[in-house]
Length: 455
Image (cartoon, rainbow, N blue to C red; front, top):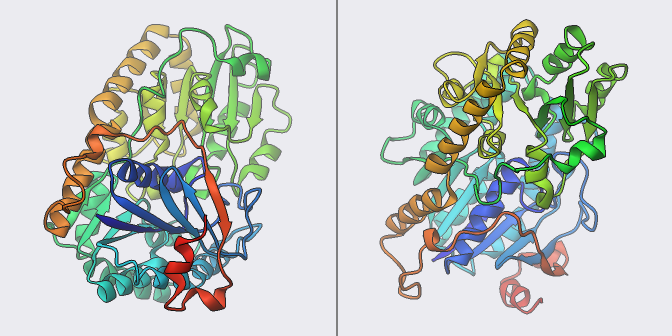
């Protein structure tokens, strides 16, 4: 079938929504579906457009069998609430010509990814115009998070935004999200249960697995063989509450020569975090590592730490947890009871109260002192990843729902299933890069034949 995916983030971004959107698109393409993507140039989590890309130009490239249409956007150097809104609006507007051009391609399914919900009206309009089925996949409830985190504060604006969000959600044929509680939140916002769908993030346990030797990063970072490493890897943003980990490193563990903290990632709060830890000899910082070194990185940890602010407990299900579990290393997560994160980590790791430095220090010292407990947690986490989060099972359910949505398997796809051809996340080879015609030409009726000739 013809599937158009419309979302802000995409590969070669290494973390978050872009990573999962790309793997999903590639898996569907490998299974024989005709998949196209309208997205922005890579910029996350550095908030800087990636090398070789331009924020102001349209561009087409073919990536692992997926035709990718890049549209311009504005990327603020120091994002805050208002700048983020302008950032999202810039892509929603600038991507409309590339989106509209696909009316001539006539997709059977138009899937849009949130964030950003600003793309939803355009996706719905294209689906209505072409007779396609509409699908909204929610990785993050950005409206709720923006107000709960204080990025936006006006009560009037919140009421208006929530009302608009509810109206948009109810107009999609399918609304999916990555955890049971996030699906329930969609239902509370007005989505019917028959239209709600669970599509969890996944992890390839053949690519992420426990090493039988010390990670190469120990030597590169100058960390001794017997030093226990507490690792945070991922985006460094407002939702993470990373200052709690920094305070733990400074408050009680500063003199522990047998414990080292490693922060790996980029994001809006990284500079502030580095300033907090400038005088701490037990703390090291790394930038995001290429995907081919991800398993090496995750195996650096003796203990993974997953900090999270208490006010976003059910708004997000951290995607980084899947890799932590697959690496078979112990996990400490901050979560309130009865939240989905609590249920996922409880009995497979240590769950502590969010934003509590003393609880984090106690949990770290407990695991450092008990290697058997660390091993038990690691084994339980990996078993969970293998049983519940495999790409094969997740993509099979996705494809089944897509087929049901469009009313049966198209005749040009005889029997090839996503679960038989799972894309490997370790291969990020990209090819066939070209530039789009100028913006003034992209909405012309002849644009699709022109695009097809660009290779």
